[in-house]
Amino acid sequence: MVQLFRPAGRFACTPQPVRIKQIIEENHRIKSFFFDGDLPEAKPGQFVMAWLPRRDEKPFSLADNVPLTLTVANVGPFSEAMHELKVGSTVWFRGPFGRPFEPLGRRPALVGGGYGVAPLAWLASEQRARGQNPIAIIGGRSKADVIGVEKFEEMGVPVLITTNDGSRGEAGLASAPVRRLLENREVDSICGVGPHGLLHALAELAQQYSVPAQLSWEAYMGCAIGLCGMCEHEDGSLLCVEGPVRQLYF
Ligand SMILES: Cc1cc2nc3c(=O)[nH]c(=O)nc-3n(C[C@H](O)[C@H](O)[C@H](O)COP(=O)(O)OP(=O)(O)OC[C@H]3O[C@@H](n4cnc5c(N)ncnc54)[C@H](O)[C@@H]3O)c2cc1C
Image (cartoon, rainbow, N blue to C red; front, top):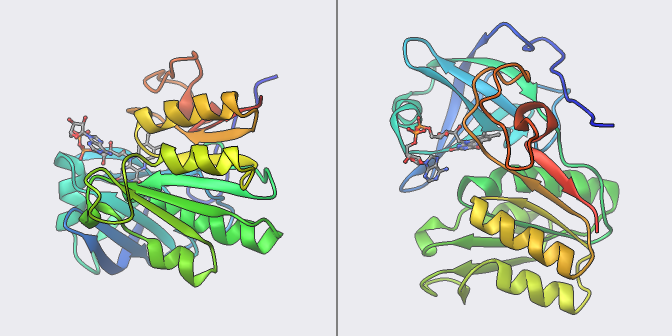
């Protein structure tokens, strides 16, 4: 039976105003926003809908729940409007929504790039608290695109870095060290957040090495509560309530 993740809690359906209390520039196009509010019931992998009145409402993965934290890449009109906000500005939130990452594996490979690293760092801290021993594999086009390394290192989580141009870490794609780790049985499961190309590569590796994978897929979203159908995934699921984290068991 399909498990649907319907929203619950204070921010469930009516957007709630929350002020920005701190902004950190992670790199040339990514900022982290720390809000003056908490979502104690939220789990890594879940997302919120952020609304800027008269602009739009868009989904963002939680980079943390206490305080509510988002890491946003400036790629278009809405994310640019987010980047123009200042400390003290208000964003309206609904959520948390969606299926989170589940505790899976003793030594998970956490694979991501760009803003995807932020929810994975939160996931790593929860996994460490549960006694799991994650390894982070962070990919980027170039060294300027690699963020969040120190967050993993502070937790004692080993980090492998890849860049397409070889300017930091190993040259190539993040999937290459993941294959090596699987081959050497140094990891027993995969958690991935990133572009669809990376997620497809991770799904293939999971199948090839018969390990479970949890992959967080993105899509344009409208309602976030399973009604509008805008976020239908390639397997027919609605990512807002049956994802964004989809499980693969081999
Ligand atoms: C579940 C979920 C979680 C998400 N979490 C985050 C998050 O934590 N941080 C975050 O920044 N965004 C996240 N997104 C994406 C976010 O919702 C917006 O799509 C994104 O901010 C772009 O919106 P926009 O209006 O600024 O640009 P759009 O007009 O939607 O896009 C502008 C252009 O950029 C391209 N584009 C869109 N997204 C990206 C991207 N991520 N990288 C490169 N090019 C892109 C589009 O194809 C388009 O050509 C998430 C989406 C989903 C569904």
